[in-house]
Length: 487
Image 1 (cartoon, one colour):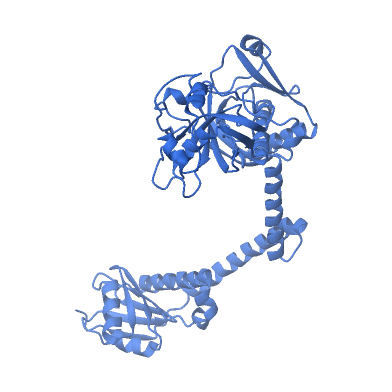
Image 2: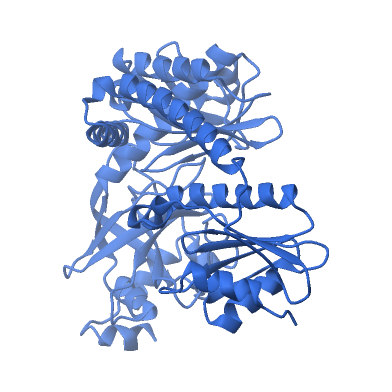
């Protein structure tokens, strides 16, 4: 089938040569790859896909003549998933996802010039790395796999921009853990992490929320070490010797007899197989984004470093400049301007409250007193506030809500003063109907407005709320209210 698929590209397959290379590791029938929840290729892979791949990504990010040892379609998680092919190649410059660090991205270039985008790199077995390449539009995954089998030599190039940003965040997690131990105490231990190109996430053991002073101290400490331009040193050593040196083992990781230890001066020393920067200077600026609880006794910090830190500071500066523009001042004066505005706002709120109290509890003089046909007394009150019906009040939701609050309070006040009557309180187009034990307020208001064609309303037995239609007058409402026979 590979020969048939390869013929679509005008190519032939060197079956004997390819099988000789592949069978150096194992022999088994071809099966498609699947993806586990953790992002790694699942155990359903055929053993032929688990050929050893030599990782050279610590020393180089480009290989001009890598050999494809295996290629198979990745079983899509859903119909909307991007079609992928898992490729095992050696030597491999791509770092596989692990230890919280995301897998490398990049490009594979075939001998006939096809550029295949690498969107992730995963570990398929103890000695096997798979890069996941996007299947070009119009090409079937099996056809692409066959093409790679027919042309097994490719140029492999890691996306250096993504790698450098990931490396900065990985190195920053090491300094962050050291700063947390210095600031909070030796009880701090890593409980998990995520290291991506856009940010880092670090989970650690701690008994309570951190104070702003502690957060500032940690951020300043990491930046201090970054500015000291400390060299990042990587050594391979026996596990026992590494432990004796005081190197910290990462949470949840399993190690062999020989481990990789990453040191940053005398500040940090950790077991780590990830990629890192050459100097702490690449971590500046380090910016904390958030700190929160994720479980009992476990806190989470999110942060950015390096170029992502620069972007974050630029966003903060732009936000501050935008606030300054709205306040008609300069950035340096924003705190003082906000303090003055807060003082003015509190004074205005107190004044508004006092005026509202006076308006609500003022003398009660109904515009009209009458009786419903049931004999229940009805009082119609007019809160004559032209400003409440102004365009400014109707367009401004906050101002409109303030007027409505005053209307409701006034209605409650007059109802309390004369509980034997029902009360209709009007302010502009808005109406509040206060009922009593004899009249259901919502139903009465609904009937009054509907029978006279004046508007719409409804509500509970205690109080109803409605609106007059455009053109409806207060006089018409008075007449309708005092002349309604309630059903």
